[in-house]
Length: 374
Image (cartoon, rainbow, N blue to C red; front, side, top):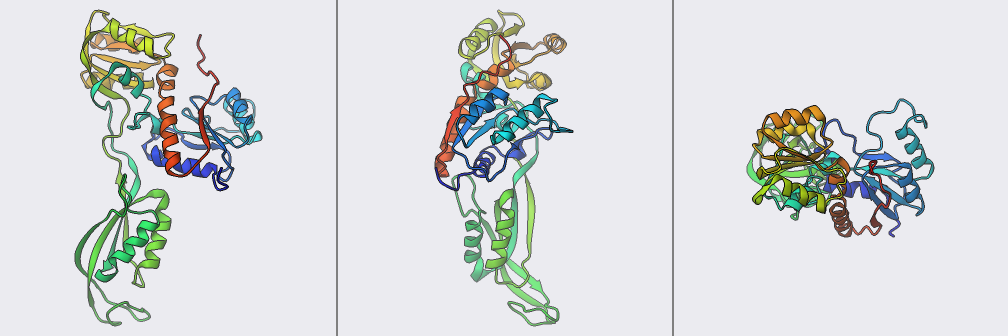
């Protein structure tokens, strides 16, 4: 293991792949317990953080627990064993087991590890799109600055080296357009061009690059160092995340299928011991919406999307009755089952990302069973 491999390194990996800006406003993601400087030798991936999971982690020093469900979901007035979260957090802290959560920012992932993907994969849904989309603050800003023609490439090189201008698999991405900047140096100024007290006109390039929020400080410092002007003009423009970020998946079945057969396919391939079906079992289903975990709050979105069937977990009695009255068939495949089925793909994505960052800690699945029902 590289000496520099730390909790902070793994948080950066997770947040780059699953940006906290994509999490719901009510969520609590990221570091829950521990120090970013603690070393990491193993990453233990789980759905829920329990005392048994912390015990499992503590058997290998330097184990980071990476959970889907936050351990500290609501603020604690006191950190004592009086609550389940307080007891487990104390246990983790005293055992030096760091805990990190990726919750709704993982739910909305579009890399095959999102928690709505397992049901969509089981059913072979085609023409997939998010069930909900909403504009939200993104994890990137746009840096706009103005540079004399001859200095554009050195400035862009410095910005790229500091972490700006990377979009997907492309680096040093920028937009430039020529124009003229005007200014009048005041007494005490040391202008790059022009004279104190006189209006100057300089041929400049408007340079635009995208910057991850976490790299803004380093990029602005690089801009100030590389830019020839005494005073550097720049703007930082917050970017809105694209409307392709949202909860759930909507798609079409390859061919119309009886509700009973759809339920049987899910029960056979997902760990869903208490799968429940509501609706006419002989009804032909064409379009399906699915949300991993507890999704009865999005039934209205499913009805609005015009689907035949909604698959999720934790469906309540009266909510289900109301949905049936509005013509929607439902399958409750269980909160745990729908989300736990996404963990293998999540682990694989984490391993791929770690290889790209030269992080060598083993990424493994927890062996602790946290489903509370039998």
